[in-house]
Length: 134
Image 1 (spheres, one colour):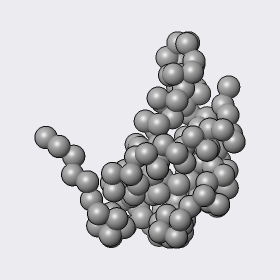
Image 2: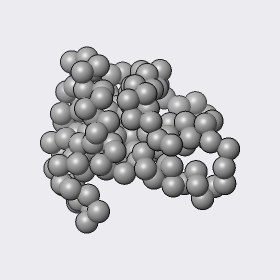
Image 3: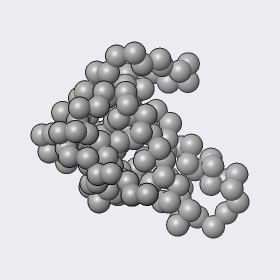
């Protein structure tokens, strides 16, 4: 089975919530790969490090890092993710942070669906450089 690469237009046609649903897993894989390759420790500590980078407040700050780096279409996907309706904000997050985190996940989902994983990795590297987790 091969994973189908969508055109940018096809990927952009998904709702921001669907892009964020998928992008959550894309972003988490990048986070896990990043921490596993930098930390020789037990699984419990690896989990703690991962949680730091996938929580809404961290992802919200990450938007500040990558926003100036985005092209017009990427910025549009980010905006659509931030403005998505039907979002249920958990008690542990501020609504504004959660919306920005959803926007980040939508962008990573979009990039992956388009087969632009190199671009997702480039943006993720910028986040890690600006916001290292130790």
